[in-house]
Image (cartoon, rainbow, N blue to C red; front, side):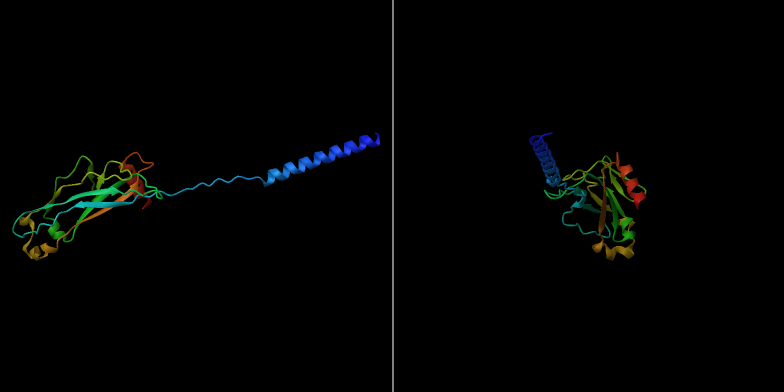
Length: 185
């Protein structure tokens, strides 16, 4: 090999090495970023009531109380993520002896079902921003069922509403969702 051929070979080899080194450096310094934002969903539910000025409960007369009860799955807005959910409601009375004289009126048995655990279960999925159909239209306090010893407590008597919610996915029914919730206990 002549001197000129040697120089060309060395020059070609050097150029090949430089191109290879630059390619490797460029590959190692190039990057791309992707931001994956994951937000946990939540179900923020609240009890709604249509409860006009309470009718005073007279100890010697049956008293008709208007009280509609429903639950709303509140919207979370742009930053929040709301999930579909199932809800259940229980009722309690500030005085259980007077509570024995109370009966529910206009109970919605199409959308709600009562269970032995003391809860009324809403059978439908409650989506973000939606409300359940009312559980009932009111209550009747039957005077003849109240012992006279409790008459003075009637003015402070309260019907208390408690509700819970559980995420609807991945469950096919309200029973399956609540059963899974109870198992996690």
